[in-house]
Amino acid sequence: MEPGSDLELKQKQFNAAMELYTGRKRYILFGRFVAAANISLQVFLLYRSSGFSLGPARRLYALAAAYLLADFVNGLVHLHADHMDNYESPGGPLVANFHLHHKRPKYKDNSLPVVYFNESASKVWLVPCLCAVAWLSGRPGVNPFLLCTLVYAGLLSSAAEVSHYLAHNSASPAAAFLARAGLLLGKKRHARHHLEDNVSYTFLNAFTDPLVDLLAAKFYPGYKNGTDLHFAKYTAPGGDRDNSPA
Ligand SMILES: [Zn+2]
Ligand SMILES: [Zn+2]
Image 1: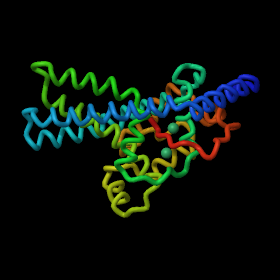
Image 2 (image 1 turned 180 degrees about the horizontal axis):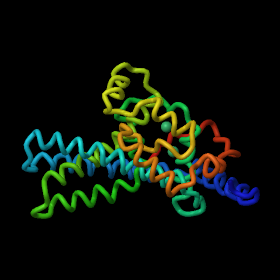
Image 3 (image 1 turned 180 degrees about the vertical axis):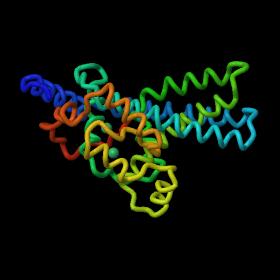
Image 4 (image 1 turned 120 degrees about the vertical axis):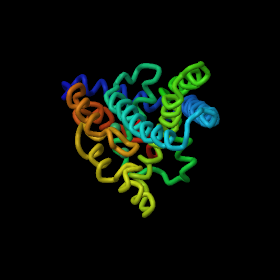
């Protein structure tokens, strides 16, 4: 728990950051640019991966490996981002808006491609990662299984946001079936992240949740008595904007 004056200062900084976020179009435009960059790179890499010399069975193994990798990496980014509190940095308004996902039980209903685009907007870190994979895919002698895994993990990182959205919004039997099959995020597992402290950061299918929980318990203090208190005095003008876990 932060001392009173430190907490008040953080709350003021949080509100000022949100005022910037909601008052300036540049953050929305920046998000659209990030989403467009992520999706263009994903399409390019998917096209590129069709030329990798890899049979269907090994592609399936690569997909399974990519599922674990994307679940773990996105969970780690989420864990770290939930603890960021430098609201006065250039990215501070994005961080402040991001923290509001903890008090959101339901998202605005949208079609899944729109969710995929909108939620890819918050994945700033994914752009350099996809650029690196694109660069690697042009190098001679790189293992095609590794490349394929990285390409699929890049796509699944955006798909994880859709999985998170479905865990909040969907009552469809198909989504429930896919969650039971271990392909999407289960509602019960994800509810822990919102109700408890410092747990369940992963959001593709939560297979790597126990591992990220261990790292969280060892290296991070949690959000309930930290960053969650920073938005305690914030009221959104006309409702919060959508934001994703990472
Ligand atoms: Zn969170
Ligand atoms: Zn959530």
